[in-house]
Image 1 (cartoon, helix red, strand yellow):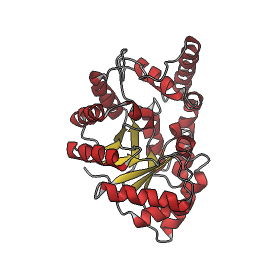
Image 2 (cartoon, one colour):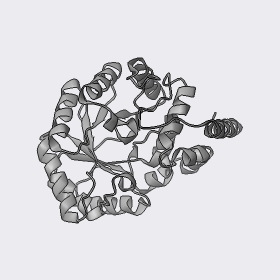
Image 3 (cartoon, one colour):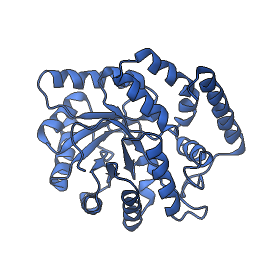
Image 4 (tube, helix red, strand yellow):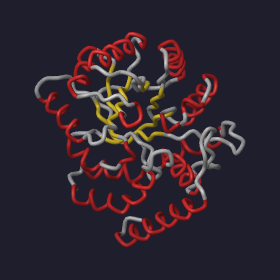
Length: 307
């Protein structure tokens, strides 16, 4: 299954499970994959920023890729961002040979001008050849701000760029600008949105095709997307609201991954909430806060008849 411009739904950003000693937990990779499928994922994205990809070696990355692909028939996108094109090309080709649907690339730091950004992604497209790829636009982490006109140039110049992972913030106007351009004749690519799902209902209403993020309740995102396409906008917003306190807590820079892994471990998706070093688990106070937020969320969902 090859990634195309028509992709939609929820491509859940997967964590990378580790044992308490920091080794890969391949059994939990199986459990996690099953969990995401059962919770309504349309596809999976592995080895992203929140998947701790920079902490894995090439061989470990391939272990994860092959394990996930052996577990599901859903399309799988593999993050291949690297400081140099050689490493990017090697992992991308190995991932596609293993059965991945496409790859995802974020810009390297230090790109400042529009020409530098467009030139970088032209190099990405040349390096990847005929491999379909996702442009990850996450300036809060990469420090690279990509205006709509540059994204449109990349889309025009690089036919193998088939998706934008939109994580700019504020970024709703960027979605609207890109969709206006598509309405006026620019090539339309898929837009899936990140940032923990913080703005997912509004992003859908602006023209996004779904979500690509790792919020620990992927079933909520799948239902938001379903309700949007069913035309049930008010119900979509009501369903989304009880999750906002947890989304807010999980969105803390530097702590979000620990929150996400703690919840996924509590939900049985992974065996351990281990973050590979450098990185730290939640402290006792944070654990208590997260558990209290989840309890209130569950109570509110039950009250609404959505639990």
